[in-house]
Structures are given as C-alpha cells and as structure tokens.
Amino acid sequence: MWTLNELVQKLIRLRADGTAQITLLAVCPNSEAVLEAAVKAAAANNTPMLFAATLNQVDRDGGYTGWTPAQFVARMRAFSEKYHWDGPLYPCLDHGGPWLKDRHTLQGLSLEETTAEVTRSLVACLEAGYQLLHIDATVDRAVPPGQSPPIETVATRTLELIEFAERERERLGVPSVAYEVGTEEVHGGLVDDASFRAFVDALRGGLEQRGLLRAWPRFIVAKVGTDLHTTDFDRQVASRLCAAVAPLGSVIKGHYTDWVVNPEDYPRSGMGGANVGPELTAVEYHALAALCAKEADLRRSRPGLNPSGFMATLEQAVVESGRWKKWLLSDEAGRAFDQLAPERRAWLVQTGSRYVWAAPSVVSARHTLYGNLAAVIPDPHQLVVDRIAWAIERYVVAFHLFDSLTLFERQEEGPVHRTGERSRTWRT
Image (cartoon, rainbow, N blue to C red; front, side, top):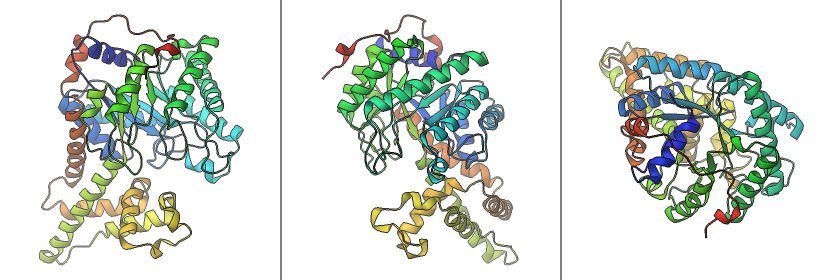
C-alpha cells in the first residue's frame, strides 16, 4: 500500500482534477477502545485512517495508554486482523517537540534535556513504522508565560528536528515519512496569519539550504477557527490558507476538530486533514456511564450482584493522577478537587478519563462491570466500541471518506505541485 506521502499526493490530484473533495481523518488513539473503533470504522467504510498519537499517549515509557510506539503499531495491526482489513492505516506522531510531553514540563527539563528526549522518541517512532512525524517546536517553557518564542526560533528548531529525523530514517533504512509542522495549541504556536506565513517561508528556505526539500511537510497545521473552547470551523480562513499552501505541495490540517458544528465545510474549503480525540474520550465515558446505569438497574433484580463501582473508581483514579489540574480555569487555580463545582468535577473526570483508562484499578473495575452485564448483554465491550465507531462515522460522512479507498486506487500517478515555490504563492 502507499506511504502517507503518496496518499496525500493522490488526495491533491483528486481535488485538482475535480474528482473528489476529501479530508483525511486522524483519530487520536487515547484508549484501546478508540483505537479498535477507528480500525473498525476504516474497514466498514473502505477508507484510509490516520492515528495521531502524542508523546503523552504513546512513548518509550508507555505513555498513559501503556503502549510504546512498537506496541501501539502492533495493537493497530491486531485490530486490522480482527476486522479483516488490509487497507491503509497510518500510525503518526502528534506534537513531537520540546516540552510537549507533560512530564518534561513537570520535571523542569531544560531545552537540551527535553530535545534529547524528543529525538529518542523520534527514533522509536521511525523504528516502529510511523508514517508521519508532527514536528512541533512552538512551545518554549523558558519564555514568560503567555508568550510564544520568536518565529525564527520555532523555524530553526523545527529544521533541526526534521534534519535529525531524516538522518535517522536513512540510517535505519526505512521508507520516506510525511512531515507535519505548526500548531494551533492554545499555549503557543502559529495562531495568526503573519506568523503562519513567516514560519512557512523560513522553513522552506531552511530546508532548501540543507538540501532537504524532499522532507517538505505534507501537512501544515493552522488555526482555522476551532480551539479548546470553540467549535466553529472558519471556512473562509481555511480556504485562503489551503489555496496558499497548495502550490507548495502541502495541505492544511486542523486540530481541535472535536464537536465541530460544521464538519462538512472541511472538504469544501480544501482541508487535507483533521484530528479528533477528546470527543471520542467523552463518547467512551458516556457509553460506560450508561452501562453503569444498567448495572444499577440489574442489581434490583439480581441483588446478589457484586457492584463494580466503576464510576467511583474512575473518578478516584483521575483525581489521584493529578492530570485534572492541567484543565483548571484561571479562577480555579489552587483549589482542591472537592472544592470545585459539581459540574466542573464531572467535566474534569470525563476529560481526564483518557489518562487513566489503563490504570490497574480502572481496568479491574471495568472488567467487573462487563462481567456483571454479560448475562444480559453478550459483549459489553463491543457496545462501547460501536458507540465510538458511530461517532467516528460522523466525520467519515462529512469528510467524504466513504469508499474513498476506491478513488485513491484509481488515481493515476502524475506530477504534483513543486515544493520550491517562492513566497509569491501566498494569496491574500
């Protein structure tokens, strides 16, 4: 099957010749159930699927999923066998850069220390067969809070990491990988037009100087209206940015696509890709909460049933992890969990559940919950997976991904836009 670089080239040609407007979907594999559901959705819809794994989720230390890059890829392949799917599945690194692993910030690592850790993780990703590396150097914990590093610094660090990855890729003898650059994260990044354009120009010039235009990024992340607190995709901004990078052989990729109210506008505007993650955690959480409600009802007719206590166990695990503090609002800083409003505690448990799905106490309580329900629900786990797969289907339909593999297979090979276009390609 094609590399992700080749798939994006096919995507560009399909759009250029008027055959189809397609946006690729990247699911963040923040749990085993989400990973399984995404593979199932790919098989059911005959579509490629990307998996954007952060270093918090999947890393050499196991991340919060418990998977190293190699274990993550092996699990993805196991699910492809389960669902008899031999179509393209693309493991990808999301947000690979200094201080983008929470532990690096909590440990107070220096730039040299966090960069060294990131480069080791890049090697592990290449060894595991990742198809895309998101090089994100937009965060600098050494600058004052609320400020972003200069664009020149971001570009230089991005170039250094791409150069390192290419050197290691060649050493390992693995095929070409696609690169993704930029971010729209709320704590830093390329969140305005001028910064975005300056970064792209600096990156192109730097890659040309290093003789690395072969590593020109296929995906460029930009702010297209959505962020942590908004769900309105800005089609006009996206269309302008998509048209600007098209002559460079790139496509725009959106993050924070979760709960977006107008997903159908992504392919209309020319978006090449979109990430979805926290929304699927919420779907998994609510599916399990519904099973807990059924368990409570079941105990009325079967009083001898040993309750799983799943929701209480989940909340305790989230609180003990401390990860909920990452999402506190400014006026909540310093408060204990039990001092927060009930609706905020519920939201923090739902959001933080992805960090603890793999915690032994949560795994055990989940096993008990499934066992209690097995007498009346043949496969509770599959019910949860199906709920998540149904949520993924919303994006499959909106992004015109259904049976897209057939279109990609028919797409003739041909030239794509050059990556060396000058800044005159920017359109206003």
